[in-house]
Image 1 (cartoon, rainbow, N blue to C red):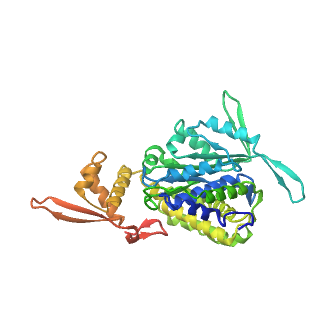
Image 2 (spheres, rainbow, N blue to C red; image 1 turned 180 degrees about the horizontal axis):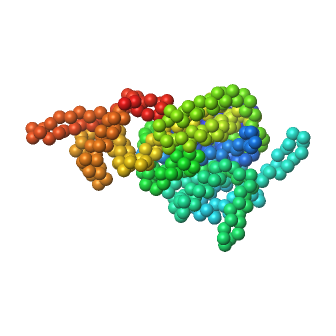
Length: 417
């Protein structure tokens, strides 16, 4: 820990602060990483060949409505980034493309910083840092989803100069783009509203997708977090927001290089083609995460081998878990109902076919439901027991197979049949 820091590790202190909350820990970890990368803005960077790599992240938290408490981590990020001494610009919900580009252009005039070069010369560097935060992706994309998807896709790459021209209102010229995003949504909304080409294409492949299905724990009466610990988090994040300079990642390069050479094999092993574009960007996201992990514990802007090891592990978990969030979005007409039925069985643990049909009759028929059940059996996610009543009618009981018992091939992200 840097001597003047109040937290040994900013992320560890965040997890301690939110212990008495129900949101899954992975939601909090990624919200914390979002805070760290937002605080760094473009003031910190990593040289990556012919260009610099900046530590901005796009994060999407996805879970069924109400089940996993998506909102608290997102709300926390907005709150702490707005604290005095940090004050990272945060953008509003339901924007238009023009409103977003205008906000970035206005930041260009005020948000720059000074950097001392090795020869002692001090130069001014313009930047446009902006944190996009929304508890509902549907709200953020409400006015013109197509335009907003396009611009977010384009601005992920932190352009040195970017210009948006309109036919009537002139042009917005932006210098030093630095956009961080954290959104929350539900699997159903994703399946019903995002075009399939967005999943696996340019848009979602830029996001760290963090799905959740269960609460971390049940907290009937939430307790207020420690004021002292929150003050320490604010103090250290403010300090991080003042760091300026280039990361030294020499200690991390051997591990990164050997891992990078395995990515092509992972593409061939991953049967869910929607994750292939993410795989092609996974190394970039890992480096951004490694930068955040470095500043979480110290000011020296050195990425250690341990930082790189942890970042690699985190992006590989995303590769394994993200398909759950997009499970309902696919080419099959049964994709959405399959996802819903699977969730009902998982929550209930055991259910009869009749009861399951009562729950889902508005969305399917008996024949489709039986097809869904056969598919889930094939994936080894459920098992069934069949009997017959005195009139010869089939009676079916359906049982959820706990994840640890499912015959899951993590390397290939598939179920062995």
